[in-house]
Amino acid sequence: MSFFSWAWDWVTTDAYWHGTGWQGSGSIPQQLVAHLGYSALPLLIAALIGVPAGVAIGHRGGKGAVVVINVANAWRAIPTLGLLILLAVFLGFSPLTWLLPLVVLAIPPILVNAYEGVAGVDRDVKDAAKGAGMTTWQQVIKVEVPIALPLILVGLRTAAIFVVATATIAAYIGLGGLGRFIIDGLANSQYGPVAGGALLVVILAVLVLALFAGLSWLLVPAGLRRQGRSN
Amino acid sequence: MPLRTGATYGLAVLAAVAVAAVSACSTSSSSSSTASAAASSSTSSGSNPLAPAASSGSVVVGSANFPEDELLAEIYAQALQAKGVKVSTKLNIGAREVYYPQIAKGAISIIPEYNGSLLTVSVDPSSTATTTAAVDAALTAKLPSTLEILNPSSATDSDSVTVTQATATKYHLKTIADLAPYAKDWTFGGPPEFKTRSDGLSGLKKNYGLTFKAFDPLDESGPITLAALTSGKVQAADVFTTTPQILTDHLTSLADPKFNFAAQNVIPLVYKPAATPTITSTLNAVSAKLTTAALLQMDNAVITDHANYSTVAAGFLKAEGLS
Image (tube, rainbow over all chains, first blue to last red):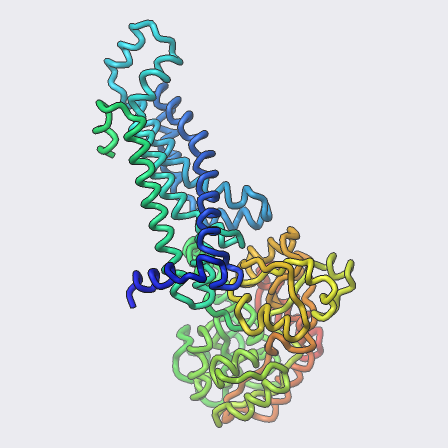
């Protein structure tokens, strides 16, 4: 059997939708909801940190920006599962244990894209905004951020896909989410839940992609849309 | 060691990260073991653990590729040397699948084994024996004619139901059976397959009538399980009986009088044609003195404190009057 037939057989097994298919692993709807929760919160926190930071650095520019952006890129090398286990050992099982590794994972793409977006705003446009008598705050909010929006959304979208795909690690410390099926399946040498759980993660990631495509259609002014596709 | 089916998956990533550290460790430990091997034998045959058997007149003590088995091999080798037996060592050979064929054909003469895993992995996978006596009887009946087991020690490295010392004191817990009044309010932690394994939750229910309030799927007696236990996320967990953190984190493994978990006594596996009465009596004397508590102390010394294997082994033999 191929991956897809294993996955399909499992996903379409009625019992797994009612939580009776497998002792203690929960039902598919329940773990889907849990997975969304484990994804949404870290993404929100990372956005609240990464977008303002990226915009501020992009606006200021200079040598400091180069340092921050390179640190953010190097930051991507932090192994998420390693960090999770480290935190489990040192923090025990506080919510930070699963939250922090996912926030750490999501910040770099958000920060770097927000920076690139704002730093890349045409010099002439910035000068025009200044010349029109806008305060710094107004320049950033009314001119630079809207122009950078396609790239900011690209950063959020990339981070969202990272987080949705990686939130499976919550199951490693005994929590829920779609990782539950994958990890329990591996532990019991059952390929069905492993393939099915992975398929559900992929489907969720594609839905997230679609969500951001819709968001970008709604939020980005028509004249700027082409820019977002370039990255 | 007990069967470790499956659950190494998640640690693969960590393992990759830890490769540098681990290889550094194994370099230092293997250099100490080769040093002791060279000191103990004039016929040490290089570093290839799978090289042909050493020349006649010398017995070869082998070990699997994890710290505890290397330590046990070091103990066997030094005890035999003390009785005038010419010994060479081939430590850190590999998993059972690798060394078992080697001892069956005599390339290794002696290896420290665990009776339960030896039986179900290499000798008779269908066996359902769980007590030390039943496992040893099954081994004696089923081992190939070239191999024999000597007396089992009381030291075991098996799965166990483990609680913190504070919990054990508070609820007066000695054996798994003592959990009966509390299990319904407690969460149990173990590897995910503990839910479905026959010696897992269903075994605890069958043998001791225990039904826990909840089960947390964690890892195999690793950092996640230990953190869950010490932080109180779970009140009892599946921990291997010679995990050094039992000492450092102040844990207590509860006795398993009904053998829910199959026996895993440390036992010498011997290539019969190499055995002599001196070898048999010496190793049986070691087994008579070896306890889980002593093994746990020594594991902690070599794993946590990075003590030298041969020093730790020599200390044990001296303390027990075996050298």
